[in-house]
Amino acid sequence: MMYENSAFSRGKSGVDQDVDIFCEKDTKRILVECKRIGSTKSLPLDVVLNLFARMSDLEIKKGVIVTTVQDISNEAKMFAEYYGITILYISDFLKLDLDSIFN
Image (cartoon, rainbow, N blue to C red):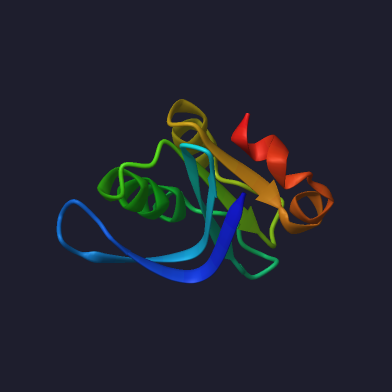
């Protein structure tokens, strides 16, 4: 398994995509986006849309958003669930066996 942080990858559009964490195992690739959001706010849809756009450009099917807030907007939840993006609170991510995100 390979992990890189703060990586840049050129997408099919020709644009370099800034990636917080890039994970690769065998032929599976995952993008991880880390978001620190004020405690009085919820995770907005635009964070999920932004990750989805980068996943699409890099032809990656799975994404994970790690966030500092537990409140997630309904739109963000719906979009993430539909497109296979996992949203995790940071303490849940830190407890996670990283191999499990490839399943």
